[in-house]
Length: 228
Ligand SMILES: [Zn+2]
Image (cartoon, rainbow, N blue to C red; front, side, top):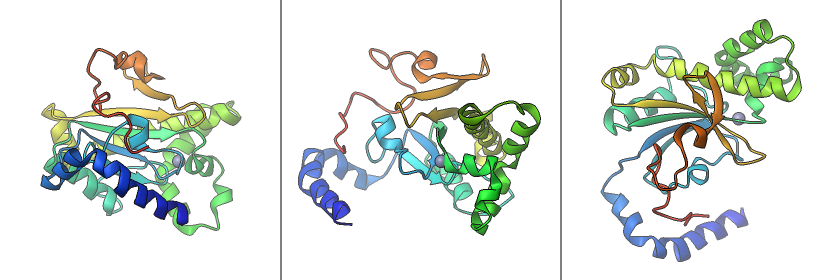
């Protein structure tokens, strides 16, 4: 806990003064550039990954970066999505999975999660991924199997996302774009789903380098990681 308290103190004494004008301006409201749906895993930091500041990402995190389909389980995920899309009018939604995801491991080996009833219940939403892998990729093993599950899971959540009325309406109006990403914990690389080639490719291959041209998500370059 001491580490966290020291971090708060450092934020207040060093970071806040450096970014005072920007951070104080946030008191007037938020206009985030994206809704970021990621895993709760402590190794996956949306803000550090995208080099964004407070006010720039509207973040939803849960175990497995899951999006319950509309009309299923009520809860904070649907309400957060609705608020981000309908009220804040974010132009982008990113669903980001990651390598070595514990929820995906539990999906592939649910027998290890039986002592966690809430997780067993939550894993019902990853059943499509488990079944798809079992029936369509029976020969995949180890790392490759897990990576494929992570990617398939992200794509399933993209589908679930579109069942939410606010998202469906915004998509039809062309007001929002959905992006499927995976983050590699071991390298920091980000893969994005290429809808033409139907596979995950390095993000920069899909969007081009951020140097000299606008990035679709975030405003890289305006601030240099002041929160690190
Ligand atoms: Zn995870």
